[in-house]
Length: 181
Image 1 (cartoon, rainbow, N blue to C red):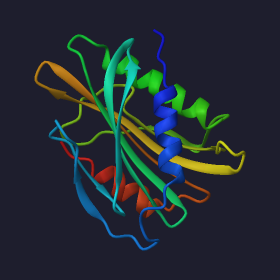
Image 2: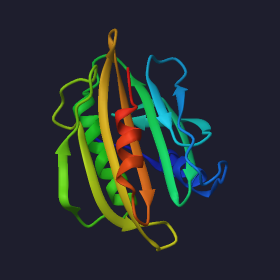
Image 3: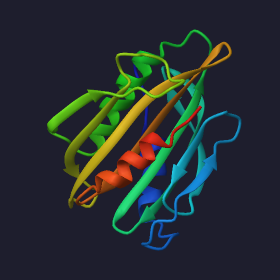
Image 4: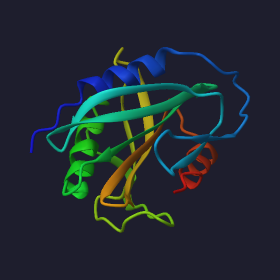
């Protein structure tokens, strides 16, 4: 399966360069268009939608994200066509994200299962904590999750991530716990 993520990388780069909120966390509920999915973000989000190939087919990827202090926080989601292997899509998405951040291997806490009420119990639904590099070569840590939920005959995939030189667990935990179908 070949997955092309250049549009996703461009979206994340744009979000990394935006400074649309104050350093003070001001958690707010955010709805994602065309979905029952709701998330919480610590600052006013910027939004974009890009057509990207996931699982070999083009899908509209919604991205919401913002900067809170030194942290860049983003949530991405897309509805997959019926019959698409969501587990394979999540595995490809994880590899692309880790490769883009030049992650050599996850941190000692490594990779752990990530399950939320309403999400599908897939083996690729995980939380990963890792160290990598930003596009400019500066070190960065990431704390990220991937999951999927059923929406009728379709499956919606979701990815949330916090990039920061030192990820604050309360930001990542609140972000990930705030993802609700």
